[in-house]
Amino acid sequence: MLEHLPDHYTAVITGGGGIGRALLAELSRDPRAGRIVSVTRHRERLEQDDRLDIDRLDIVDADVTTEQGLATLSDYLHQTPVHLLFNTIGVLHDGQSDQSTVIAPEKRLERLSFDALNHAFQVNAATAAMLISTLTDRLTRHPAIIATLSARVGSIKDNDLGGWYAYRASKAALNMLMKTASIEFKRRNPQAILLCLHPGTTDTELSRPFQARVPKGKLFTPAFVAERLLAVISQRTPDDSGAFYDWNDTPIEW
Ligand SMILES: NC(=O)c1ccc[n+]([C@@H]2O[C@H](COP(=O)([O-])OP(=O)(O)OC[C@H]3O[C@@H](n4cnc5c(N)ncnc54)[C@H](OP(=O)(O)O)[C@@H]3O)[C@@H](O)[C@H]2O)c1
Image 1 (tube, rainbow, N blue to C red):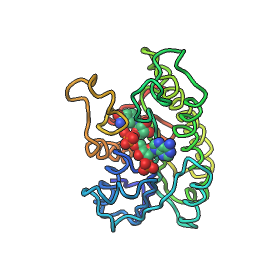
Image 2: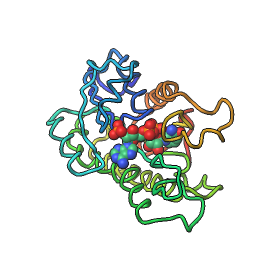
Image 3: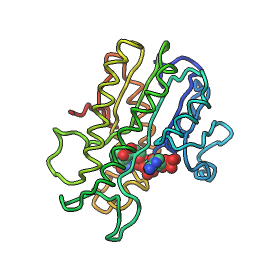
Image 4: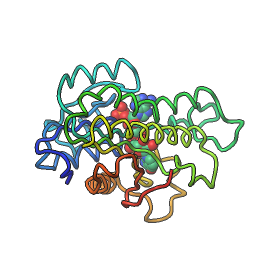
């Protein structure tokens, strides 16, 4: 797994949600992994997850959707070279189901709000770019993989259904930011691979309100998805940098 990276590679996983924790569990089993750094606002969720060997992880308590959180992560890592940066942070809804809910997929134009659009762009798009911007000097001079979880609904080509304005548009913006960073990285670190990934519909808090509509067999466990995504990125070379792949190793059109 992750043969592109050196032995004892350092991995930084941002977000300790359903898929983030499953990635941490999978990476912890890789004998070639060195430091595994988890960045989360909710350390207790990691401590309560019995699939995780908490002593194997370096946990950074930070909200990297803010300048302060990025500075905390940067200070923590100091000059450590980062070989794998895997961003799993994302928001689709705020867990409220009442009419006053601020963050929820919008079915109609009348439901749009500056607050929800700005929040989605900050969490889903800007954060991934700001992470790379903050850690650029620690992501160059050695083989590196920079992956972020996007979503198929962020594909403009694939948008036949409409709706979900803020989430879709923020993921499309994320894709553009990653594609653009991949072009700069081709010059600054030709050994880097930047990828956007679609995990498929996965059984986590993020998909919970929408799971009733998922066809049987199409709702994946986080463990399955983590294993698949690490297999997908392990197949890639620097020639693939700047691409968008799904969990099944199939490229997605922008
Ligand atoms: N689940 C799916 O079906 C599905 C499908 C397509 C794409 N995705 C994408 O996959 C990624 C991971 O999602 P998931 O399913 O694992 O969801 P999840 O369990 O809800 O985890 C998302 C994590 O993102 C971080 N986050 C969310 N809102 C934040 C905020 N306002 N500020 C800072 N951090 C915030 C949190 O990390 P901490 O609490 O640890 O700080 C949260 O646990 C997301 O980008 C999502 O869009 C998921």
